[in-house]
Structures are given as structure tokens and as C-alpha cells.
Length: 97
Image 1 (spheres, rainbow, N blue to C red):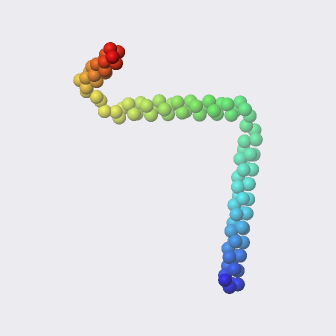
Image 2: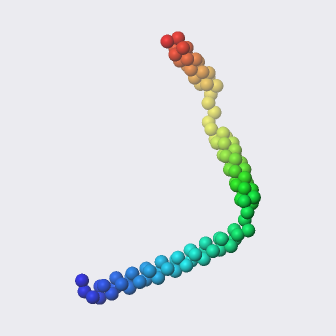
Image 3: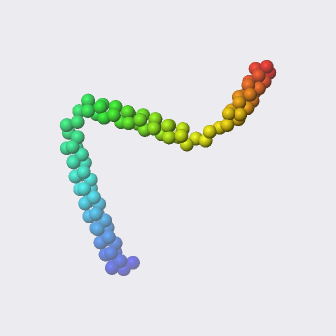
């Protein structure tokens, strides 16, 4: 390898190092901003937020269940009765055997 190729490699490595350093400074600034924003948060506030999130989750699940129920195809009543009769026959065979 000639000397000019190694110079390019060194410049690329230097550029990557500078970019990594700048990105770490940006990350440190964001972490500092987050720490300052949450400095006055106490355990009671955190517990209230956790409870609110749980309530929202239950509400979303209930709504999704309702929507899923609306989208389900209706099964004909004859088919349900037939399945019940088949299930009773299977139970009688297992109990008697």
C-alpha cells in the first residue's frame, strides 16, 4: 500500500472520531435536558402517571374488544347446536370408557 492510501484512511478515521464525539455531546445535552425536566418529579407523581397509563391501557383493550366483536362473522344457530351435540357425545364416550 502506498502512503497516499494510508493518508485517506487516517482522514476517514479522524472524521469518524469527530462525528462520534459530536454525537456524544448531543446525547449528553439531551440527557441533561431530561434530568432537568424531571428533577421535580416525586414518587407520588410517578405513581399517578403509572395509574393513568394503566387506566388508558384498560380503556384501549376494552375498545379493541368491542371493535373485534363487531367485526366477527355471526355463526348460524344450527351450527352452534350441532357443535354442542357433538361435544356431548364426546363427553359421554369419555365418561363411559
